[in-house]
Image 1 (cartoon, rainbow, N blue to C red):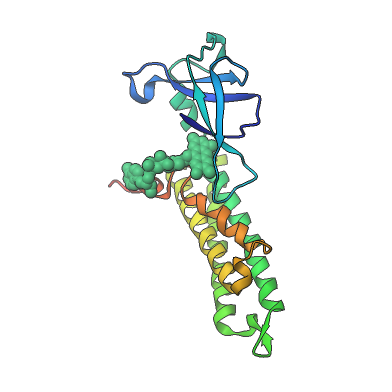
Image 2 (tube, rainbow, N blue to C red):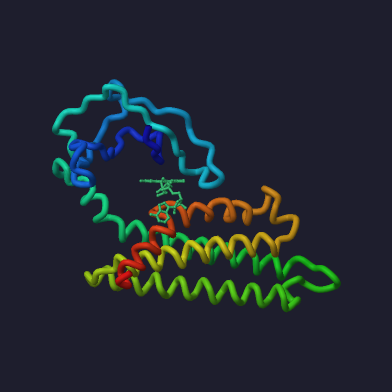
Length: 225
Ligand SMILES: Cc1cc2nc3c(=O)[nH]c(=O)nc-3n(C[C@H](O)[C@H](O)[C@H](O)COP(=O)(O)OP(=O)(O)OC[C@H]3O[C@@H](n4cnc5c(N)ncnc54)[C@H](O)[C@@H]3O)c2cc1C
């Protein structure tokens, strides 16, 4: 069973084992037509968030594709995939920073609008300092990400740095979404306010594109551990 995003597509890029004994050096990428006999799309998975991205199980039963379906070279699939890992992590970091910024702005707007005890809740220091800290966290994540993108574009090896940017940005995004929801009080838990979506959508950031635990493994290895 495979899981994919974009079940409504016409083609999928599939990584399949083509040499069972060769470990990561035995994977090949194929471009597979969705109408290929034996290929079926199973149930759409019911996710906590990211509802605009359809994610489903894919099944392959005696599914045969011609050699011309190979994308790149036979048994080089793993290396083709990892060549995109730094960008994947940086894109994840960029999206997390952008999402966190929007969520922060929504929380600030709400803190200015919502009045309790005769004044906007943003005038309570506990709320204003919370928002100030979130702004600091986002700025730190943004600057690390910008720096990392610049290094990568300059051709510098940024494997560990991209992992750092991914970890920091996704964890900041989760923190911002959680605190922003808290600032919205009971309304934050209602589907009519967008902050609940940020809370649900950001959660996967620490899981996909390589979990943050694995990112920390990469960073630790880079530290010589
Ligand atoms: C919405 C969504 C979209 C996705 N999209 C894609 C996609 O487009 N392409 C794609 O390839 N994948 C995609 N994934 C898969 C995603 O990358 C994996 O779920 C993720 O890498 C974790 O793998 P796993 O689920 O098998 O967890 P596991 O590997 O089972 O990990 C479970 C837990 O154990 C920890 N763990 C495992 N091994 C170690 C270790 N060596 N050291 C320390 N901790 C460890 C993990 O960090 C995690 O906390 C998607 C997942 C989701 C939820």
